[in-house]
Image (cartoon, rainbow, N blue to C red; front, side, top):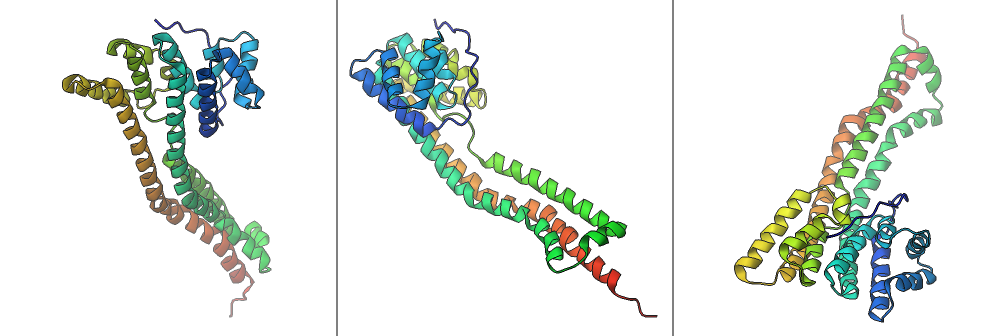
Length: 309
């Protein structure tokens, strides 16, 4: 049975780099395989200048349990804490488990980087176009038109500016939501299946392995798509029993497939984003450009042109 200690008060670091975590975990695996005890391995890693290891050691010196000290780093370190907890509970080789976690985190980080690179171009274009209405407003000043005077004197011009600014605000919020929905989600794809594989390969029964993962630190942080992942793991375990194939290998293959699917789906979302960003452009940005840049200029010209009798 896994006993959960009270969570440390330190807030998780949201900017944790998965690549840095994978490198640190790989180094920990080497130190443990060389015979270092866990506390000494963390201190050796901290002595190399690893900031996350230094933070973990500082918490250990303050009396925080090791698992809580690791979890407090947030991000991929929560995966490490869950794997560390399960490995020590079932007696799996900790160094080998850390190597697996390092490879998993590095693979997931590579997939997330591919998605971010694919999103960079449409995101940059969208942010640039959001400045177009304000650029139109500045164009009037550059051409020498008394845009401010027209807005102050003409209620119609003032209404155009107010509506245009409102459309700019709507376009910004709309664009941010589209970009947020296309970004990779939190967590490491396939990590739950990897943890079950670790528990099973350590000698735990399938039922105990599932219980250990369900009560691990990963389940405390990861709630999105949890039912879908549990269903996928159950299907793999059913196949293992029916075919007489070791469950650990099938689970790791399923985890790798899940990471590949996350990479493909991320690229698809990035490709769709380019067309979806045309909606706020056509509905909000272009009308805002006309209202802020063109309408005051036309009203200024009309106001300065004498009407023939």
